[in-house]
Image (cartoon, rainbow, N blue to C red; front, side, top):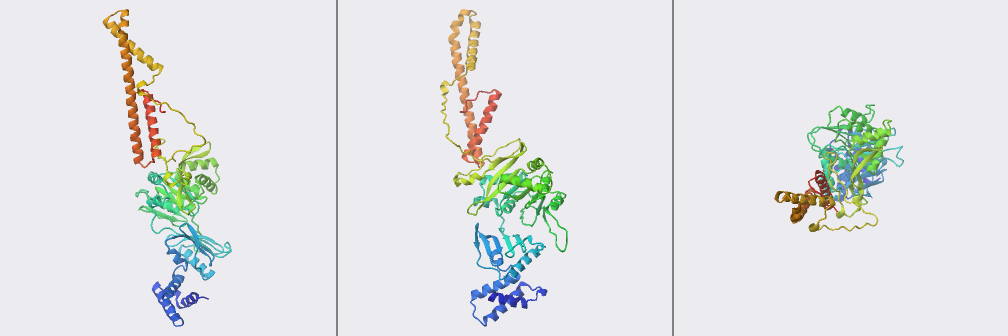
Amino acid sequence: MTMPEILRRKLMERIDIASEPDDGEVLEEIDGLILGEEETRYLPVAQKAELRRQLFYSVRRLDVLQELLEDAGITEIMVNGYQHIFVERNGRIERYGKSFTSAEKLEDVIQQIVGRCNRVVNEQNPIVDARLENGDRVNVVMKPVALNGPILTIRRFPEQAVTMEFLVSIGSITKEAAEFLQALVRTRYSMMIGGATGSGKTTFLNVLSAYIPKGERIITIEDNAELQIQGVENLVRLEAKEANLESGTEITIRDLIRAALRMRPNRVIIGEVRGAETFELLSALNTGHAGSLSTAHANSVKDMISRLETMVLMGVQLPLEAIRRQIASGIEILVHLGRGEDGSRRVEEIAEITGMEEDEIKTVFFVSKRIWERPAKDRRTGTQRKTGGENRMRIREGSQAKTGMAEEKETKGIDYQTWEFTGREYLEIAGISLGIAAAVNLLCYRAWWACIAVVPVGIVCFHTYRKNRIQRRKEELYDSFRDLIAWMHTALRSGYSMENAVLEAAGQLEQSLGKRKHSGTGTAPDAS
């Protein structure tokens, strides 16, 4: 038995647990034990300080885990039995040099954690989710399920709230996509955030919630309260409750969603949907609670839709078509988060559900996973457009990659001095010229032979009219070019890339020329 274990046993004998001593009294007892131990052996100052901390943490804190919880660089703590502790730091998993003194001590720490959350873990209920006082997520698996001893997993959350600006600065999301999502949250688009375990779904949900208007009433529903909604005064937080010895009543997320709909919420935020409660979530989204947010485990946007269908079927037996229509009408935006090979977390896909087509849910991608496969300087999120008469901004990926051999086309430039006219235009000009010549003949000579004399007048009129027509076309082209530059300027100031600004301006120009052509105000030149 090691010295810390011996001193801990002596400390537990001296402390009267029933009297609930405070931290100061416990530290006095620890100092007395260390002084007594120093009478028999020499202890360096550093060793005494470390021993004092270990004893205090073992009695009043979470033993060896306390040091890890105080390390801001650690994002995950994994305890595989009392002898094996692993941590995730900067996206990489490494083994921790210390361990619990015994399996009993680890079980004591686990009971201490779950007890504070009004949870019970034992052989009859060996799997429990809980949380620490600072909001960190805890998962516990005990015997007989865990064969190698108690398993404890702690998911750490940043002490300081993560902001969208921070995510942009570390490359987790592009600036264009960030601004786009901010606008969608403000305009009450319902979103589902998906990703694998540890991809940052809860953190990203917290980031998006910062853009909810402050005057709205928000209700959050979670298995274990983890969300950190900021800036909302009218906030109601609900947490599911498991059945325990004190009360056999279980309160599920499904129950809380039904109750929340009677509390007059503007938005409902569900920490995570895992099963049958998905149907209640879709019901809420389809009954006037637009702008709600939630998360789910998924490998991609496409997989997220399949997951939602499966989870609905876990609660109700409905035709697949009916479920898909519920999803298509209730959820508008899908966001998928992923992890890179270096452990970094990032937004890989953003898609909009546009409706149903041939009994399938159709999506339009604003951000695709492919952008992370390009060099950083080449990444872009695309343009924003209005569709369907609504202010629905679309972020499209830039240009599509060309495959195969591109077919080269020679385009003939325009000579404004010899601008070609159609046969109809020539007849129109000749008719006008002959009409002018005939009018001059009738007014001046009133004889058919005089037409020969006014032929030069007709020729002059023909060339004059033709010259004016060319000049008018030049002015129309100048106006179109000026509009093109103005549209490009506006797009670039809005944050578009150069390529996407050109695409947006070209689309606007095409619409403008089409309207001009159909209105009869002139004939547009060939766009080629």
